[in-house]
Image (cartoon, rainbow, N blue to C red; front, side, top):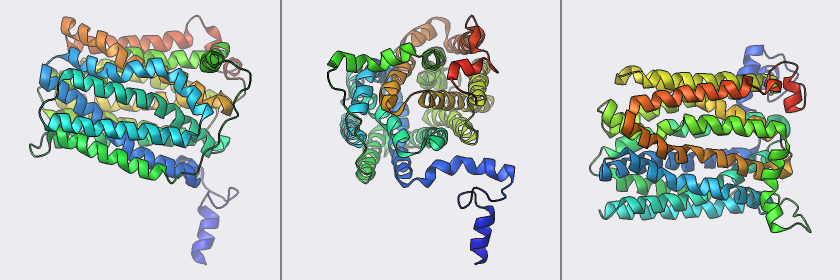
Length: 441
């Protein structure tokens, strides 16, 4: 009885009218979306799959660099993920809006698991070559191009609109938790002779199998009404035409694209940075990526406690975008390993907060029947990171890694500021912000 009285008085899940302090209410916001059973299952299934993907980023890069010793090879391997994301994402968005999203997730997750098993066999038998790594990442990139829009659109299907911002933020917090654990686990296992790269890929395959088991427990998802009398080409381009016709979505897409284009290639260069700038091995590389992941986790959890006001979210996006570029600039100028770790944590926190806020604003600005297609167009912006890693790596071989990272940081900061405060004067905040996002916060 005493426990029930305590819950009624203090637990915001039990009674919204309960006298909860402002601090308690703010800290309780991050778990609001987890009240919904289906979303909670989807979120839990996210963790092992994303953990495997984050391990893959380290493992593929490590193996490619060990084979070639070239930063350009790292970029070429990353192109395997980037090209499908850019070319297939609009089609994937249409698929996510036309077919049961759970089925799309099951099919794509199975493909990713099989390719991870193939990579484990190639590395374990010692016959792996760079072109094989590129082929595996290309297949996985095709699968992820269809997987991510379906998963993102499914979030909006499983939670009510008032919990959408919180659900997206928690989703991104899970992603960034895996950014912490994945590199650390991969770095540790790669340094163990008995496990090595083949063991890492085998563990990834097991994690993807676990995701499949959990996804089967999700209920059949809603099938969006199919348009009648519309050509296939019109359906495939509907998402891009809808975004192009909406000034808020158009500008949010630009703000999503530019930091990924200019700043995020630093992640693909991290194996080379660890070896050439700081002189550390696979464990040191894991520490660098873990520092960024810890910061990203903190940034995502902070966003999860924010309110849903459009003005505050837009301002937060601007501030976090500036801090991302400035943090990357400071990291580029730091020649010592230990001080570089907190700088990467700041960079990761700002990057995660920026991505979460941009994603939330996009989802809030589109109707449910367009969520898959808008997310498909949004995924095209993520192709900017692996696609731009090739010119970034070529530049690194010309002017050096620190100079390349410095240029990335400066361009990221400048692009966010210019797009937000430049000639598009209506992007100013306050009263004019309502003209962008269509409602008062």
